Image: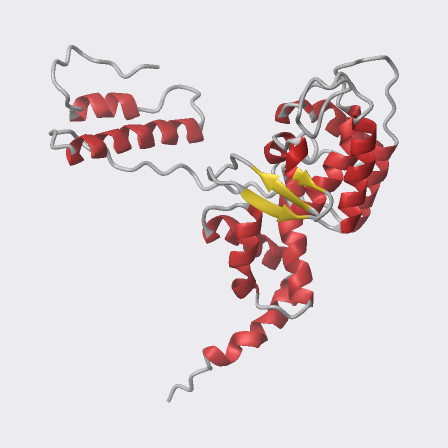
Length: 284
């Protein structure tokens, strides 16, 4: 909805205009409402910096998101891999993404990259000689490299061998049976089938674990492994944050809190590593 002009003839956002714009609309989602407020606030700040007399609305905070992502167990991950390998196409559907599922799901679990980042990979971005991916136009606006294991590289080699038999209609790495690109939002149907085959049921009103939960699983399991190795997770946190492409440590820190809730005994062991930095004080 455009900002109501109200007959304004000068560059100025009045308090009344701002309050009308910032009013929450019926049935409006919290994130959309807070984003609208944020956009107007930043515009007003910009106008003030340019010397205009503009009203800066107060910052609006949405409710705290208490959604807990689904963390797959090792047994569930193996079941998902086997389910991907068992997929069968019952009719000749050239726009199907079935061929990419075994490699895609393994890549997401092994690297923690976003589904969109995987879908945006070009053939040239998947270096299977030196085992790394080049990710472009990531969520933070930067490109980055992601090393991959030899086992994942071998899976990608097998996929690439079959991909070469498809029509060459795209330079993207993940393509449909007709050789065209697979958009990031095109895997939902096959993901639901994979969950059903793996016997991973939905949780309440949530229609099964999401594809995004694979990324959460990667981060949590990475931290669990580091904790088992006796590493100080707060020391490792910047490395993991850079690897998964977060703009700030705060984004990765939520995974640390989730890990502490699920594996308190592991993090209590790692606490002793740096306990000498803040010694216990004796009060008289």
